[in-house]
Image (cartoon, rainbow, N blue to C red; front, side, top):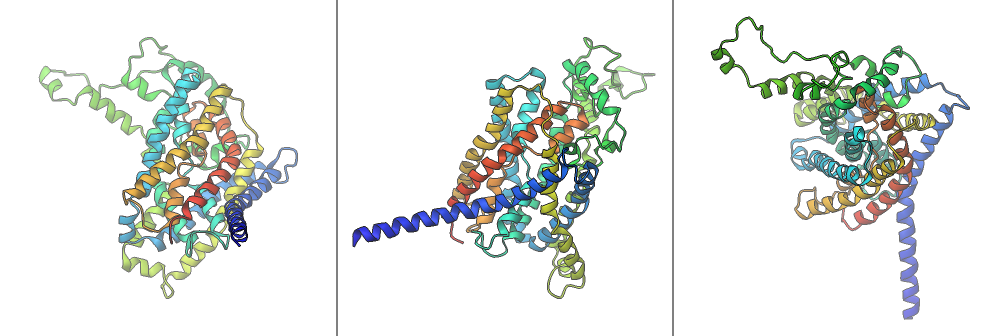
Length: 454
């Protein structure tokens, strides 16, 4: 009798574990299938669909599909109470970035990449894909009938991911933008490599798909100082650098006709003036991209009940507009994965970063950082920072530590003319290896989340 009971218990546990594993892996296999379709369609040997078509598709994702998805789902879920409960989602982005930067610095110490790529190593370890890929994973997970997240799975998941994107965008267009400027001591070498890129026509289809995958029209965003070591030139002496290669920057801000001691005492300090010059050159205006605008509109409309009743609800006067946006938004997940497959079809670029550093960044980003994420989310749960009984809330927080480096980093590297091939190669290998690491950690997350009651 006891033996029969133990056998039945063992079989039930094995069956339950097998079902948990399958429910975690099947959604990722769906995404993998879509990516493989995109890879076959864009592969150079088949060329069933030209690269230009994938670039147009990426523009549609960026300017239409993604904003429609964010507005329709985040706007319906957003309320004043939810805003107060969701505060840890953007904070978690900052925490994951700080932890990633620390781990990236450890990778620099251990792997010893070429000196000019130290900042690249830290950035590629710290900044993960917090937008398109998590949205695709959430959509695929919630498409499964036996998902562990309960009703309204997709709407809540998309709302949580969308609510975190504005923090990532601000970090990318401020901190990442300046950290990826060409190193001053290697400026001449970097400049020689950049000239080839700058000579490409604006509409040249030979520009890698990776560059435009998450920032279409990047070539229109280049400024006078985007491909120069601007901060280094402002804050450091450039006497040892060729003036023909690195032109000086006027820091005086004054006419020079009169410079009495009294006027100089009233002038702003030199450090403050230099900080102001750097701030003026920060492309903060690029933050207002279509997905960010959609997030802001959704938050504003969702928090004002009178406005929300016009767009969302069974008898909303403008409900037909929201329904139309939902129809368009349904194309976002398959389009993102097709573009990702087209990006992988191009293959990795040649990199001078070194095999040891490439492996170090990939292992740290995809294997070690998620372990820290589990500990941080568990600690936040113990401190009652998280929404009680919400598995999807915790799943999105954990995914912020698990995804590969953001594809947008490749676009920023191209814009700044810094380590373009190295960033492209790292993103390629990380997304390839992420097929295995994501599978492993999604299984682990599903097992952990089953202990949280709905």
